[in-house]
Length: 333
Figure 1 (cartoon, helix red, strand yellow):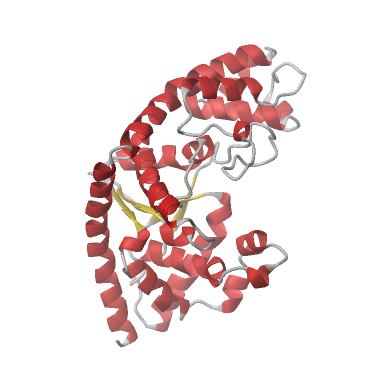
Figure 2: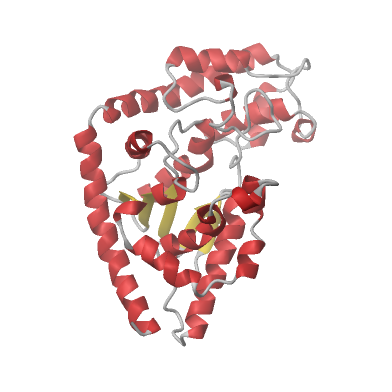
């Protein structure tokens, strides 16, 4: 039996290799499996937990759609839409926030990390957005959610909210209890300048990441300048544990080639980094450059991207509004 998949990506622009290998590549595989029903949402409501420039936000929504399509997600097979265009997401978040408990939200470690010491100045949205995330997921009778380590806790909260709603209103199975789909290998791609930090678009140095819009020369240059250590490449996986930069680069190579880490280590053991970097650049250019060219082409076709969003919105709204109507009846409206 196929899975009902829901996943959301924030339209913050500048998606990079970490987003591709850690999430989007997996989305493409899920989309290509004919048994699955996939909903891919550009979560623009989540993005505004911090202030956004309105025009930049609009551009980033389109760029995220362009990236999905350029990477291989088929909009005729999967639903692609932006969250704010389907009112049920916001309405569902309010209804579920009356079921969720403060104590549950207070345990969310991501809020503590993002708000820092000055949490009194953080927006209410940043605090409560896991409830909106629960609404996103539960409205589509989702069975499986691809999540990274940083979102596992939020999915647990979503499961708790669903269970409490079902129990409180005596409607067993009204909300499906979604399961996490955790990518086992290569889900966390690290910075090219520091193998102990996650690759991030917020890093000040552009050399720390390969952007999905980088051209061939930029990709080659970034890999050439990527941080390494003075030793030859390791001869065993155990050796990698103490060498974060080597580990990160070998993991990128393995993921792009669909190889196990062990196979990649055996291929390059004892060799110097310059030979390995040549091979890594080659495979990166082969895989990422076509995506980059396609993104740039699609971004210029706003009509095409807006059509995908409009068709996706109609399909998503059709599903989500029916679920909200049933929720309202159950609650007593």
